[in-house]
Image (cartoon, rainbow, N blue to C red; front, top):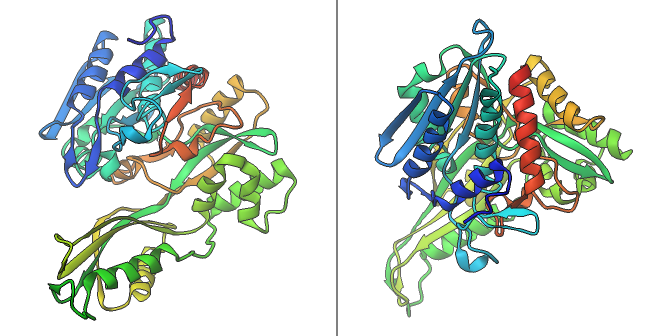
Length: 431
């Protein structure tokens, strides 16, 4: 059991981590039902009316609307996802689903992505309602299923089948933004105003089946291996957008280094370097291989999965280049594809987020950035809702926070969770 003296936000995040919602992709998932019921019961305890939507058994989504002081203002969607990527327990130093606290940190799958933020959302709303207050405008608090599979069995179906949940909403906030990085010993916050496009592809090589002892030149596994190696070794050129140019200007101002070499400048951000460098270019990473069924049988077919993240607006050119790289003998199948997004670093909500961070960490700059991955904000964009990444965390300079997304020994400082709850509550009261 978690220590009852710990802050509520930590206890809730720990509870959520202990509910195993592993999502293996392709419809293979443990399901979010128990986690959805947990957050639903919490919202009901605050006096809110909760709605559930389960379009596929155990793939449960939940929503509650919090009335604001001025209901004529456009509503704000505050959302999280309840699923997590799988964790191989033998690779971890702790049980990934125990939700333990040690060394001042909460450990477990979801501590970073994104049961931490889910707990911050719940407790920020509780802070406001328990004080007898209301947010400035209506809040649509939503928790989705299946985000780790591109949202195809979660947010995509919710916006199609339950658009009334988001009636009157214009903007949204969710994960992977608002956290701090340290640039040459100076702290700054990254506010996410865009996301790269996602294209998950399958490479298919076909050859002639035969005995493993034969001289065999039409080997599907060999052809696939060559294609996978070619893609995995491809280094895509830097392609800056308005957001990444603004990021570089902010990093340059902090560090005094030139913005002419984006990769070198990103190195000033310490552990966040790799995360930022991926926002400057398309990436294509092989992630899975499938071929064969016996040691001495050459298979007729071999497959590989490639995770491609594309600079917005370059999708067609990237797909054409991928086909050129692997050659005409390899078939490319698109498994999941979604859009890229980019929003100007301006406007009332951006100003409110920057101001909320400033009240809790005065004088620290806030810089826009383009997320190299994706969130459920993409599904909301299909119904005209502009999304941002704002899960505020003040982090130690030496913590490789971004490296723990989908990584081993995922953990987040207890103090950072409390900070995030306070900043979120501040934003929801004032925006």
